[in-house]
View 1 (tube, helix red, strand yellow):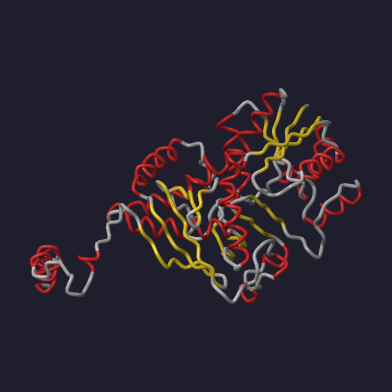
View 2 (cartoon, helix red, strand yellow):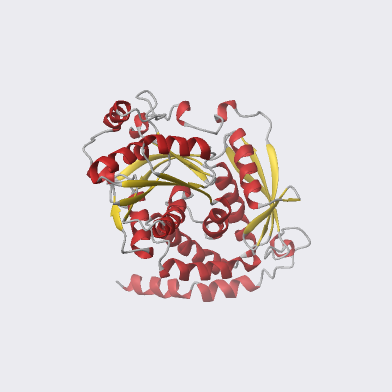
Length: 397
């Protein structure tokens, strides 16, 4: 039997290679996607092969990740439950589609992942596999094997000389890509416990962040960021720069209790400096250029779009149809937003666009005012007529 496994080099996937060999007498092929997690491919390959993999694939997917997954989600203001920028969720369909390509190339019998039976990622991976290659057998070792805890996995790794970076003192499960980092396990499982500083991977504590704020001008073209402080940048450099500068100011820490797809609540810690900055700026630009009813309706679509990503419905027609609508809303989302980074906060302090619907002459209370105040009485009479009629009816009762 030949199995292609999504390999991160973490505790679960490191143990999985040996376990699959033993359980299925299988030839295991490991695949790692470079989506900005700053892994050394040579070291990963050495680790995977030494653990028992017969072959190792490594693909640089950062540009595709940004162009086809991150930026569509940014245009959709896709924040699950209003906070989580979906960094891990967005990466799963991309990894799955490339895993399927390798499985077909290698004429493999099955694909495997290291997701738990109560997590979201198992759904995201498996729905993608079923959509793209229903003929492949799906193996989920963490749902099947005998280990009842990460501590038992660590003992198994030690017994079989499998190198892992996790310790009992720092048992965090970390998923890292260019759009954000998710951190779970250990003391974080207590929602009353403040996250210890060693849980955070890149962001400075706001208490230790610079005392002087930093300003950034972000220019968008049709919903996509293209310049920082007037300088054109490619998307990878732009996001990396915002991650670096945001992390320095303690921006992008997210601590939330979220509703998982399987029905349980979980406490999640995220670090997403660039995502936080870009979502904040993009949302403010939309307020400037989108007509009121469109802006309000799009907020409903944004929520559904975020849910579809979170639920693993990336390859669904539903998401593709919503994306067509969202793309149409972005034709006037061009302009510049100025943000201030200070002590963990990202604050919008300026915005401008050639497509702005803001007119100072209508908004001002100075002598430049051109608004016809007398027209408001008739507007209120007509707009409020249903409430007037309801009031008359209710008084009769």
